[in-house]
Length: 588
Image 1: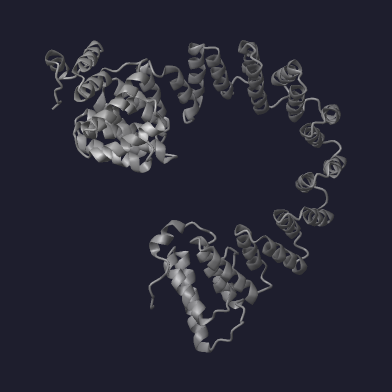
Image 2 (image 1 turned 180 degrees about the horizontal axis):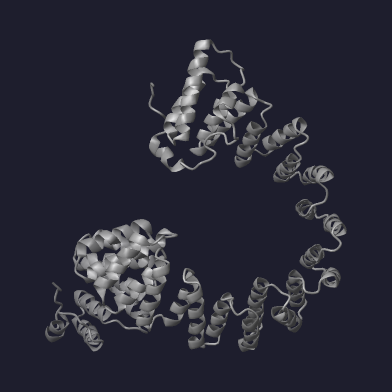
């Protein structure tokens, strides 16, 4: 079969193997599609055979995922019969997939033109028109469809949405009223009409809509609570309470009522009553445990907001443990409460219970790490290793494990952990992956593998051009090698612009300027580095300060700074000689 060069390459379509919208999604067989083809253009027998051949070939190519070939076949069909609605809608869907919306719209419009009675083609045109913001066109399509298909009551909902999108709120309400005549009063219709009346600032009609559904469901407390909530939002607490009390008469233990009453008491300033409502519900045997957990979290939040002693919830937990001994979500929440009370040992106990019961949930491990970081490195290693046994694709545990090994100066082991993380973890964002490559760069530098270190820094910056620690380290290590100083200066300048009071970043930038011979500018930045680093003075910064002072013609001040660096136990190989001679000595 002859194939011309396609506009759509196979590479473009390799990512669309699962797109159900690629071809018209109505379940029709190939034979049905061919027998139902609208014959707007009369074909000769020869052209019809040609058309059928390409059409079948296109269907086969589509079924096998050969989308470029399928598109070629459809183009041949279009060349033979440009009025065939099936081909038009298929080509329109193609262009929609590759985001050529205007061309897709033109094909969909033609498909409806040549097959105006096809409901699904019109729906596809309406969908794309809505996506492209053609609001009036969408209304026109749905109005036309309703005339043709009055039994398809869902079109009223579509038309109502189209009117609302176009700002015709009353027409939207009218369309919903028409739908309601057929389907009757329903929650979704009621809430839609309520919102529309609210937008029109017709509050009485809005509230009446919810009253209608209450009248239809007199034994259901949820709608009375809903109307009460609406009155609360409208700052009418007295009216709200009336409906809450009606709901209470129907079911005093209804979970949503507890939340509504707690909210009512909070907003009316009765914090004590709000707490009491929640406490009663939490220990109620009739309440579902999931609802209790929700209420418990809310209760703890209220206590914190009111600056109450959080310890008053502890007896509640004991009651809940007795009622629900196998619900480990309670242990997770209780562990967090213990952390708020600074009872780390009890918190650890609760988190261990949770992780033992839920080994594939990262939450318990993460909470234990909060307790152990940054001091208990061996415990951090134990926790992360256990977590990775059950969640081998979780990047955070590779990071904590690698960082712990790094702090223990087990550089090769740390490097292995980060590299394993790159290979196995699932990264939700490029910034985290960038941090991994940054750590791999740092570790390779520590191990003397400068080339590999720089390669990984490049990967890190490509993933996150604003990764400040990587930009700082990469630029500093380049300056130590006295290579690519312009590139180092550009990277370092990003860090000092982002954090102009960061002593480490200022020191790096000052030192790069020193290596470039810009001694006066270097002095400005290194003095700021000293100023902003006074709380945690650095021997390296003071030695750099001395070096720069020497180059700016201030040898006596330089000696003072070198001596300060010495007091801070510098590991510099040239510092003693600088102090002995009073002269700057270039590091080798």
